[in-house]
Length: 244
Ligand SMILES: [Zn+2]
Ligand SMILES: [Zn+2]
Image (cartoon, rainbow, N blue to C red; front, side, top):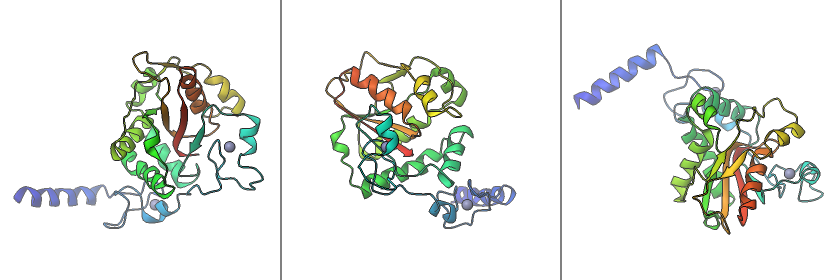
């Protein structure tokens, strides 16, 4: 009891000295109503949700749906069977993913994974279909630098909530390719060519696999991972990302 009182007073003092601020708009968070004490409700509500009709390949919202596939997927077919994302990669979610990945806020993974879980619920995505989940791996040099793999954290949360098997070491990153940021789409596909290999201890043949990553932009990384898995005999490969 005394400990809890002490803890309460101590936390109160900490909040007074370092008031919690919203990770998007940087205003002071109120004691109630914020999302996990990290984001103010206004910024959270501004996260742009991806809505149907979706491209049957990359999963982006189709503006003028003449066909069920977007022009960029017609021009450059992707190797996964389908990708899905709950959010559109701009504004608040872009800021939050940046904080998550580059500002050492691994704890944001719990909050952000809820957007994915809500989306799975809302669209009744059949997760039973998948034999296991595989997060897109980082190269070990990049992992050392960042200390965590953001895809791993998201995948772990989702697998835990849905009671699915997670195989974080099934795919290996052979080459520490340069970052995809600031590359043109065409360069992105070249940049990831043959960067993945399969862990020989994992049976991929005939399996239905869900790849998990934080963002899908050109789709090059997930596509290359799917190509590698399909070459190893995978049956169906979907890609699930937080935003696209
Ligand atoms: Zn805010
Ligand atoms: Zn598309």
